Length: 443
Image (cartoon, rainbow, N blue to C red; front, side, top):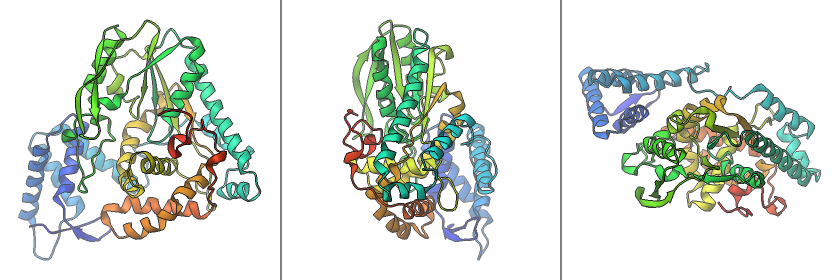
């Protein structure tokens, strides 16, 4: 039996066949397959080939295992799955080497949008974490909150203006963006602004189109990867969208998150003449979700935390880390999901974002910056005490390397700023309330 494997950095770690099965199943899902039994058979083939090559005193390498996965997939006739697997492998190799990815890209934010964010930060003395610290110590923090909220509201104003200019033409409005970017609050605020235009946005909650958990891949820790668009019943979403636009009635399914299954019908839905379907979804701009709708009938809004704040070493704080902190707080407060589980799961979130969400940003008609320059001290007050424990727990755990690196990075951010405890000065209609609670909106 194969007991150990040599990682790329030379470490020898326990061999786990589930890692092979999960990787194969992930590649299969990307091309429309979900047969776990077949993924297990591919894993059996790989292990059989490894055992045939086994020599006393040696262990297989990660590269050798991956080569054999490709071979087994091709020999079993799974050419499309093999192609997806090879692409994933190549992308990760580019990432390790610090080279530009073919499909994973965070460089497609329009330059003007980043310039606006940076210019605002410079003008409001918050381009460095040390300046955020100064704002608190010099009593200017309430003013920074007010200024940050005004900036975000101006972003929403512009988005609403752009939608208003196309009323009568669009039938589907898409609010997309990565996890915890603030899609729900932004959607509510845009709806408020267009109320006087006699526009009725009809929400289509795509969460009700999740496939049963039995069809979702599960990693070796038992964590489901429900972050990918393939976790949704995309053909049914496309069918229902087409029917709605044609004036037909559809039966919206009901997804029971407690059982992990679709159970019956939630409601029947039919559009009136001036109604606009509203899709608030991570994957709203994924082509296979709305591909059958003519482009001229769609309006696509993308939202992201486009912070331009730097640490003492002049490195930009990562947008994904800001969103992870938001999700930690929200998951803990509203979903009975611990911060430790959130950071451990985040590598799946991030992988899906890079492949399926961020890469579609260029298709957006408007981009909303949801970063609030005052939010990190609030997050430190909520979460700061947890990160030393995360670092200690995840250090040396080969299955939690991503979580360990993120914990280290966030702790360094928190080390540069004081915590802010008094949340009463944060407006009740603030986007941040979507995560910390106390909002005047109902979610």
